[in-house]
Image (cartoon, rainbow, N blue to C red; front, side, top):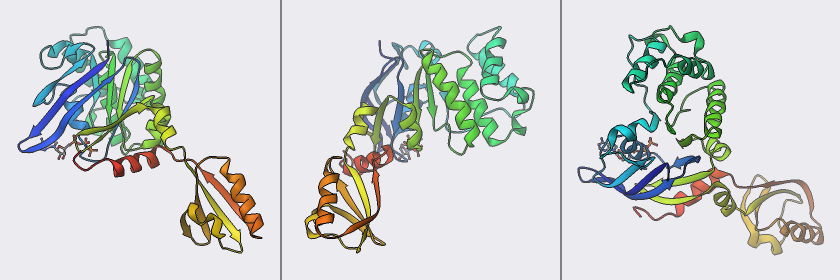
Length: 302
Ligand SMILES: Nc1ncnc2c1ncn2[C@@H]1O[C@H](COP(=O)(O)OP(=O)(O)OP(=O)(O)O)[C@@H](O)[C@H]1O
């Protein structure tokens, strides 16, 4: 059984189609990244998953439960950390988590609440009113709240937007532990280095359509071509190397390096032309480079 199944999900707001028939699955144990530019439809998809919005057509299942037909069981199977901070200012942190436990009919949830508070660095704030917390602390409570019922599937919608380095590290260490313990994680983020470091599968949305869905390693290998930046004396590129030139700025020549072995030929060509190398740098594309080129190459309104 897949952790999540999106089956031809269409969502219209009036005449506007925010999701144009999205189908993919997230497997149990995945650490899954859902990427896409602003307005691609990520939050809409997550809202449908959490039962906060209804799809115009199509079906969504969480741990085998249909989010529309079997709402309660589906809702129980997933913990969603929303992008926006939503809270009751009159509750303390602990009361907020107790209240959320009650919503799921959980009594005697104190030990797990303590563990969540500890792991998110919230223990010292347990009895503080929500309104008195800083933005980053409120964000931690949003995460804690999504975890109170120990959902097998945890969805984080831009959890690290505007949070400090310490929280990022604490949060990711905790989420990675939960993933190792068997929880399925879905993450949306605009910090692509986070997705690259944490996730094993990556989906990309553009204008409500899925344009890529791959194992991270396969996706990273698409960007095999490295780039080579050279500073030369004299600062000129021999004619034989001109076809490889990608860009030239401030006396730095950026060349396309289709395979690492091509480096030898480049250096030999430079020596033959009597040009010496003053500085050299080889760069491999990261997820951000791959993301940008895939978004550029995907058809408009695909
Ligand atoms: N309630 C609504 N009414 C009308 N349009 C909406 C509504 N909610 C979302 N949209 C539109 O649907 C599209 C997808 O929005 P969504 O919030 O899902 O994008 P996103 O990928 O999460 O973007 P971001 O990265 O900015 O969070 C956008 O064009 C948005 O304006």
